[in-house]
Length: 211
Image (cartoon, rainbow, N blue to C red; front, side):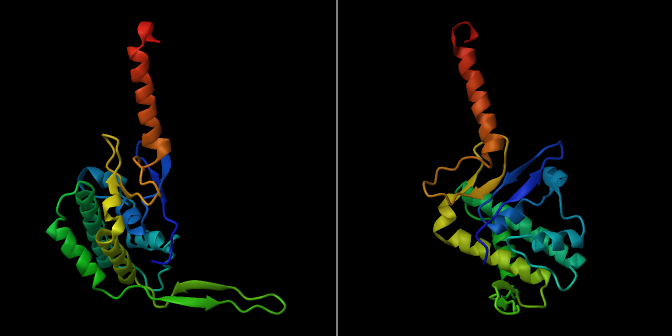
């Protein structure tokens, strides 16, 4: 994966939004929606929605071939597999066989191929060099890249850093890549602050005369 900066803005159907950095692009992708009670958070309604998400940094995979309905179905299956595998790892449970098979199947497809892009500009200005993806760019390739990142994450040294938010009612999962490894919350401004507020109220309730 080329990019090191991760994170997306998540929106609550009840109102409000917050920045959530899952620590890996594949885990960011796992939070684009879901099944059952998580269906209210769905953001990938149409194939074009998937294309737009993949085109955003840090992946920045702009589709040169339109996303198909079949690729959207495959994307949601991979998303669920990443979600299930991440939560199993966070709980130190065996990874679900179905999730492993889905991730492996997606990873077996050809991934995105990086290329250097050198911009030529008239002298005396020096041209710039950036990285892009070799065309054609298809959704299946992007999904393969995400699946391969998840495999690296689960099999690498950061696998023990995959955690679920410490809040009792927050299922968001992330990889703690901080140096001290002390991250507990999906976002400090969300669950972290809520925890502080509850702790403060609990302390005041135990103080003589309510504090």
